[in-house]
Length: 116
Image (cartoon, rainbow, N blue to C red; front, side, top):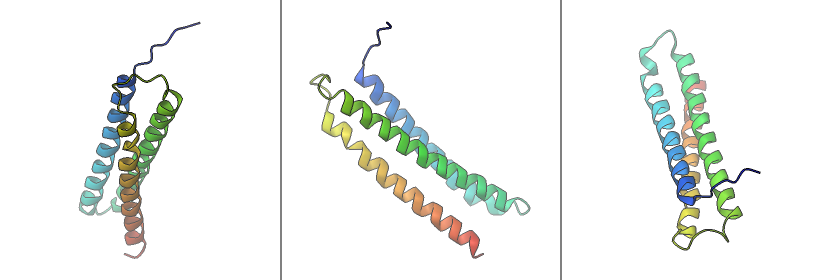
C-alpha cells in the first residue's frame, strides 16, 4: 500500500491557487464582454463564450471550496495546532459571496442580451 503524506499547507496553497484561477477567469470574462461590442459580426458568439467562462469560474469556486471543506472535515482531529482551522473554514464565505456576485452579473448579461 502506498503511503501518502498529509500536508495541510499544501492543501491550503492548492485552494488559494484554485481561487486565483476563479478570480482570473471571471476577470477575463468581464473584459471579453466589455470588448464584445467591437466585434460586430461575432458579438453574440463572444458574449456566449464569456458567459461560459463565467459559468466555469463559478464551478471552479464551488468545487474548490467544497473539496477544501471536505479535507478540513476529514482531517480536523489530525491537523497540527498551528493550523487556524476556523480561519481556513471561513474562506467559504468569501467564495460564496463572490459566486453570488458572478451569478448576478451573469443574469444581468443574459437579461440585457435578451432585450436588446
